[in-house]
Amino acid sequence: MDFSIFLILLQDGVVNGAIYALLALGLVLIFTVTRIVFVPIGDFVSYGALTLAALEAGRAPGTVWLLLILGGLSTLISFWFARNGLTAARVARILGEGVVLPLVVFLAIRTFSFAEGSQYVRVLAALAVVTPIGLYLYNIVYRPIAHASVLVLLVVSVALHLAMVGLGLVFFGAEGSGTQPLSTLTLELGPLFLTGQAIAVVAVTLALIAGLFVFFDRTLMGKALRATAVNRLGARLVGVSPVLCGKLGFVLATAIATLSGILVSSLTTIYYDTGFIIALKGFVAAIVGGLVSYPISALAAVLVGVVEAFSSFYASAFKEVIIFMMIIPVLLWRSFRTPVVEDEE
Image (cartoon, rainbow, N blue to C red; front, side, top):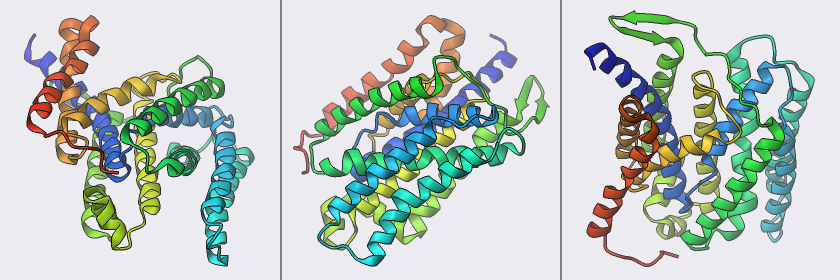
C-alpha cells in the first residue's frame, strides 16, 4: 500500500465513521434518558433516505400514511394517560402534536410536488415526515411500558424493528435507491478527491455534535435530559417529567438517524433494510462508550469507520466480522471492571 491509497482509505473511513458517530450519539441519547436500546434506529436511516428518494421522484412516500396513522394512535394514547387531568391547554397540545402536525405534513406532501426545486427543501420535507414517527412510536410503544426492565424493553425494540423492516418493504419495495448529493463540489488535495457530499457529511456531524453540546450544557431542557440520564428518580423528584424527556430524546435521536440516512443516501444505494447494518456499526461504537459516553462513542465510531475501510482493502470478505469482533474485548474489559448491579427500576 502506498501513501496515496492510505489517505484514500483514511478519508473513506472518516466519512463513514461520521455517519456511525451520529447513530452512536442517538443510541446513547435514548438509552441514557429512557434505558431503551433503540434497535429500530437503523430503520429511520432507511426511511429517511428512501423518503427523500421518493420525493425526488415526485412520489408521495408511504411514510406519510404511517405518520398519519401513528399520529392518530398517539393521540388516543395521550388522551388515555391524561384522562384524569384534562384541561383546554392540554387538549390543544395533544391535538396539535398528534393530529394537526401529521395532517399538515400529509397535506403538504400530497398537495405539492417536490420533484423540482431545491434539494434542501426536499431534505426538510423528508425530516418533517420521518422524525415525528419516532415521537409517536415512543408514545404508543414505549410509554405504556416505561417501567419495564431493560430486557423487556430490548425485546420490544427487536419486535418493533422487525415490524418497521416489513413496513419498509411495503412502502419502498425491494429495489434500492440513491439520492442527489447536497453539493456537487469537488476538491483535489494531492492524491485525494474530496466530494462536496463527503465534506457535508463531516461538517454536519461536527455541527450536530457542537449543537448537542450547547443544547445539553446551556439550555434548561438539555440540563433536564442530563439530569434524567444521571438519576431518573432524582430528576423526577425535582419536577423533571420523564415523559417529556423521553419524547424529546426520541425526537432528537430519530431526527439524527433520519439525517444520517439522507447524508449517506448519495454515497451508496439504500435498500429498505440497509439501515440496520449501518446502525449496528453505530451500536458497536455506542457499546465502546458504555452507552453513556458521547465523546468516547463518537471517537469509537470514527475508529470503526477507519477499521472498516482498511478491512475492505485487506480482507473485504471479513470486514463485517472484524468490525463486530471489536466489541468482544470491550465487553470483556467492562465485565471485569463493572460490578454486577440489579436493574434500577
